[in-house]
Image 1 (cartoon, rainbow, N blue to C red):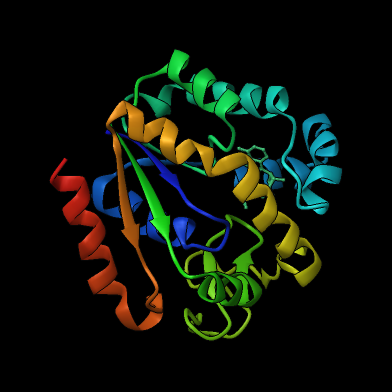
Image 2: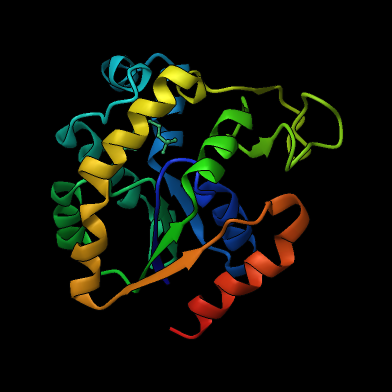
Length: 214
Ligand code: AMP
């Protein structure tokens, strides 16, 4: 299955994706995680991306497309992956369409105040980017990832100044993808306003139903 998850920053894409990866054995390809890994390793790509990420802006298409294409060309990508955070522009979506056809695109939706609450309380782990929330998805030990034991931290771009910018960028540059995939007949929409910590089963069942009904 070749799946793309769309939706505003903070809608919960990464959290639902972590579950989908386990249930369906998909490879998780997150462009944001790839950029953060490059930043951590101080690669040339990471250095190029840094100023855009810090400002809550999109990294230029040619850099992003090159990075994701390279990831998709590795052996483990084959026909079973979930793309999270890519594409984010029409140019990226068109480039992806040339590389591979998709089976399904899910657009996640939530109310604005829910999204802001999710972004401002989000903490992720240093090692692999596993996602938690200060109130809604607490780790077993404070400040430590349940999965790999690494430190949890707040992303710089989850601070209030950058959040506002990222939401504007999403509206302007990424939301046109909804119509792009609607026209291709492969888009499904799911609204999730409930807290994941207390409604996990209900939320995931809603998502499984859409995937399995496809
Ligand atoms: P994310 O973890 O998906 O919220 O991404 C964090 C940051 O990485 C974004 O705010 C962008 O600066 C950059 N980024 C991630 N994915 C893309 C993309 N598909 N196109 C351009 N920039 C991206």
